[in-house]
Length: 287
Image (cartoon, rainbow, N blue to C red):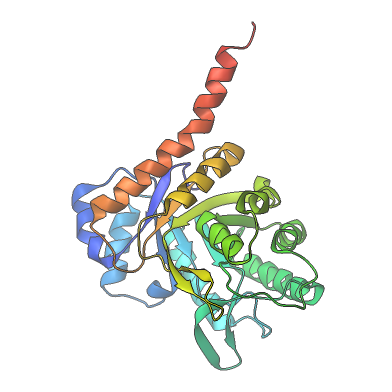
């Protein structure tokens, strides 16, 4: 398992800095699809960094929510990568990105209905069977919803976890974005999730835009610091989860490594609050 600490997304611009400075972070995460080749500089550096840090593989291309069968060749490449680096965690998104021979460079939403539920569970089962490990499934950021949905997102995820035994990757930023866009209460959404199954947390930055009606629409960009409102939501989630491996995602306009380490330190400070509160409560309890 990943250590109950904060980790960072590993970026090529930081390869040398990580090896030279050995920053005090819990783990590094990479997008699996960037490493689905046999060799090259990415593997050279990842192999060296893996000697010193636990690793998490985060997939973006399995299209677990898609109507088509899983791409077995893609799954084979993911399995080979997992065997090569023995990551502490492998995760994917509750979304789809391909249809037939067409691949969309985005993570698209699904309808939360019984037909989709059965399909997603079959896909998760197949991934876990092929990888011989428990998959972490991430809640998506969404901007539209289907009128055909008969379950809400929390109910859908609860049922996927129950049927497949998979774990949950709780993206607090995605939870905030989706609940803001759909006018829902983010903490209530988190409370309705199967929190016992959360194996990792993601934090990231977002941008604000306008929809066709002129209303504010939040977009998951991973291109800035974590928003203060997301930090507050994370603090509340940490009280429920306890210390949980937490990743700082920053994929666009990547800043110097020191900025990312600072975000990780803030996450670890908030992560420690539940343990401190528990210790104080125990200290005040009668003998």
